[in-house]
Image 1 (cartoon, rainbow, N blue to C red):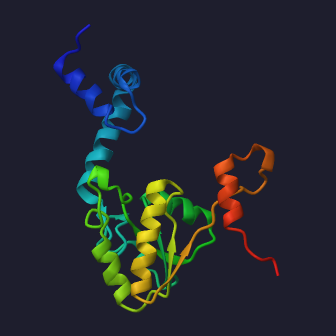
Image 2 (image 1 turned 90 degrees about the vertical axis):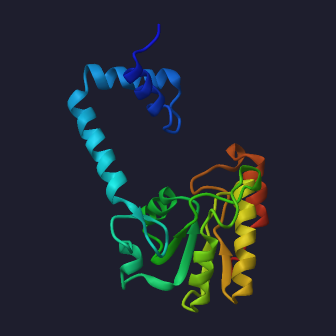
Image 3 (image 1 turned 30 degrees about the vertical axis):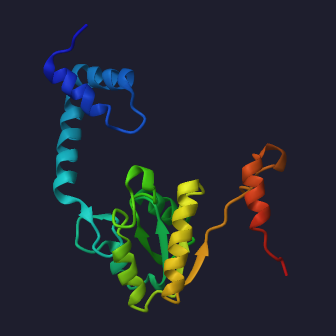
Length: 199
């Protein structure tokens, strides 16, 4: 069955969301039109409002409605610490842990030459400017433990070294409460390579 042009456009638009395939997009579109018209109007208004008002912080590139986000503008944050992450979702995850009081730099991705993503697309020039200010003493590399994330971390560690800034990498390995027999070999190898002294 062929959908009407407006319905087909809605389904195609929903498919642009991560993890949404054609069947899920169709189901969401039918729900929005059949049972959720009030909610759909609210969603449309919220989406339009966010697209108009939400931009990137001019310091860390996190999403914000002001030129400088609340983390960068807070005097309670430790400006000598900068944690580099791949996405805004990573900032949210670290903030929810409650264990970090420094500032951030959001790459909005990772180095991937095959996909045309180089230093320019990740805002590395802005990061270099922040490092050149002399305020940052430690650059915490919290990119994902993927091939691209590791390559990005290595690239950034070299950048920090040239600026005489200490670069550290977040630990990866066995989760708290995890049992070794259920941990995959790659994670165990990474955990063993990153071991440290207890005393």
